[in-house]
Image 1 (cartoon, helix red, strand yellow):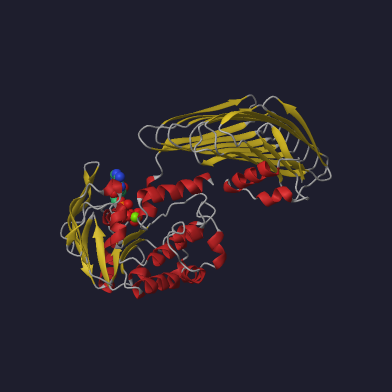
Image 2 (cartoon, chains in turn orange, red):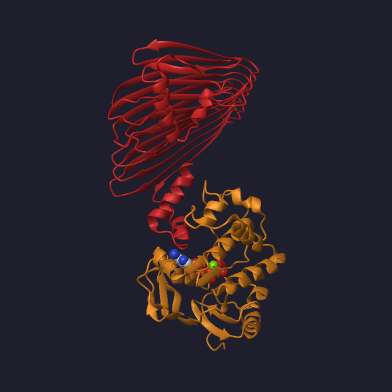
Length: 241
Length: 319
Ligand SMILES: Nc1ncnc2c1ncn2[C@@H]1O[C@H](COP(=O)(O)OP(=O)(O)OP(=O)(O)O)[C@@H](O)[C@H]1O
Ligand SMILES: [Mg+2]
């Protein structure tokens, strides 16, 4: 359903994404593993088509069609969405308004409450404001709830667990189940092995490229041995593999 | 509420626009609520309660009004003021003198409705004195015609005694602005605190001038002056936020956010900070720019188009 073909993106004379190719099939749950700065968030932004990341080369294909020219709202209309690594704050907008996009979407209160329940928040959060009065973890949970309510065809979750208690892996699992239950394809960016273990296939990113892909257990094992002690920054070692 | 004779119809018309601007007109008929309704240069209704004294005087093109709140009076319901002008052309002058005694608590909710103004000028000066330990807030919501033919000058001069707490909020976010000049000046005594804030949505060739000033004259006084303007199309805005730290341990923060949309806008801001005491501390924050791109893209990634996303962000900011 989503195919990335030889994607490259240059910033300050370096390629932060380098000739990257990958394929994601409908309904599957993928992990993208990789150290800090290897280009994971950048990849997410390229898939979403953010304005400052539209100057990539290569092709993003959706159901076999090149969508390079499509803007964020156009990609969203195809069913692509993004769960941000650091979701931003909005002054004066309540959680309820945020989840319903200012009442543009009609969800029953029960639906909103049960979705908040999936991310481990009680119903009184509906009247809270999505500004700096929410803690980082709470804000992140609201973002996950909003993604679930969208029922997207594909979501890139950029480190869904960052800023959330270590103990909450159950919550993350519930979020994945809830999304997959609706047939959503998940691309989960993470550093954490227990999160990657919840997926069906994993990609390992290094230096702006996909170094390996396959069974999550194998990729995790490789990541643990090769990447944990890796000294190079953003540059795959020659001969590793 | 004592309705002056022959003004029922005018009262009804004012009530209708008042409701359109977000007010609740039934409050004017409530005996427990202090209220004053002015239409054009006439006082068409008023009500008061124990501890709050009202006095009026007819002046040229308007009304002069004294509101005196005795010591220790804590009003559960806000004082409702409604100033309207229902004709297309003319002038209106409103002079308000608010005096609040010691240890009192009162909120003012003022609506100014000029729904048909084509060539109309409104001038309002509110002089407010807040006694020791009292808490007073003054919220002014404006609703103008969509012709752009309304000119408003609103001046708020406020003096805060020791330990007084004050809020002054100006809001013009529905309909056109026309020409607007807002000036809020607050003098603070020891341990007094103030928050003053203006929020304006400017369209077409609207013109906005806002000055907010904090004079932190007392020890441990503190203030926050904030302006948020959304300027679109060919509108112009000049915002001046000033803070003077004149006493030890006084603290002030001024903040201006101008969000722009459209190629024809012309906006600017000048922050002014002056300190006369080594132990005073002042800060400022100012920004001019388009709607935050990340916020915009966050909402667009959920399916809103650019205009819908902008509207949602701005509505939140101006709330
Ligand atoms: N606009 C930019 N200009 C220059 N360099 C950039 C820009 N955006 C990203 N980079 C660089 O590109 C690299 C990849 O960044 P990216 O945020 O995609 O990493 P990441 O894998 O998501 O890291 P993390 O695990 O820390 O979230 C980093 O070295 C970053 O500094
Ligand atoms: Mg990242």
